[in-house]
Length: 260
Image 1 (tube, rainbow, N blue to C red):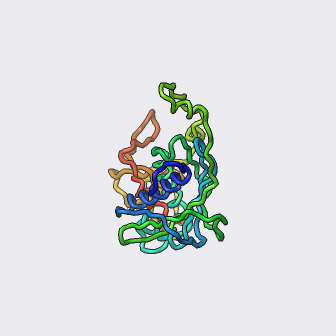
Image 2: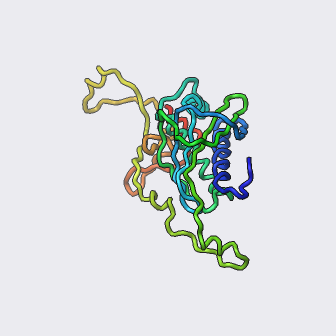
Image 3: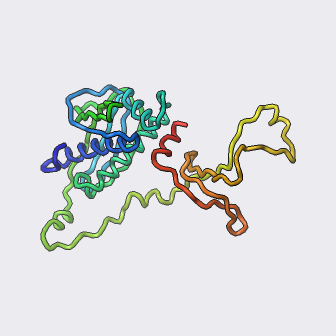
């Protein structure tokens, strides 16, 4: 991959492509390599990312439908192609990891990334993309296309900070994370589940007992927005039921839950 050097926008694209490949490789447990390539990418899936800070604009990541489903299938450990919602969630998670990693590198320094849209498209953007070939062991070869409408923003404060002896500028007050921290998400504690014939449901009445097929000593599931995020044990807090978290699901388990 090229060094950041004189073209910070290209360095950003190359960094995102490399980290996208690393995110996939980490989740599937296989080594990856990402190289630039002259190729075309068929219409399929597109992820749009808003870039703010030192660089500003929109970054788009495109994969053919075949490649997008193959990556989602590998990440979730499935034998068949996952449904569209699972592909969408997988691409969003991988892009989030890639952008988060790039933000810690010189190519994405002082940049904030916000995923705006993930979805299937019938036509890719018209401009010619920068295309990379990502190889994951002997499991998959995928073409990753990146389009950019990103510009370098001159920041006097950043230029002043580069001068020897200059004071370090204060951190910006508008942190993107702060915007979403107050959002309420539905949390559900699942003690167990079972399937019952309709006849049994019809005969329900006071005193009926449902066997959930789960030992009282087993941990309960904690779900946020329908996704398993943790497990824990039931406790009593101030006279009310509560859950003490004993384990948190890994990123791999969380992504695989999307295809369940």
